Image (cartoon, rainbow, N blue to C red):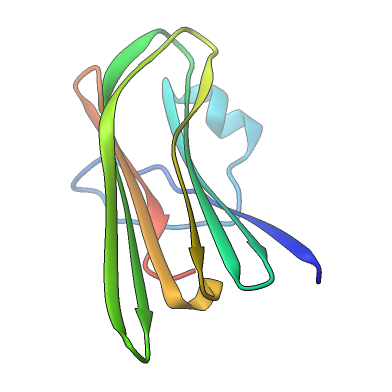
Length: 126
């Protein structure tokens, strides 16, 4: 079986329209003091989500990582959250989840609050 990797990323200030894209350009990443990113990989019938953050300047804050799974047998929601502390230029995995299923069965979002800003990245469905 093959392994496919996808990157779902969008930067949104709360109150602005939510968009999702396949990738953010390096120029966009360096212009933002904080970047959030959801990484998705699928191997067979296992889907792995990785919630990541990268700080251009030192930041301390909190995050919430939500994954919804829908299937013929019902719906499940997984919620992870906590605090983080990133140095300037540092990137970190904030949370990671591996679930049985297909990528089309999931929706995920990552919300980060730091230095008075709220950023959300995610997609209504993957």
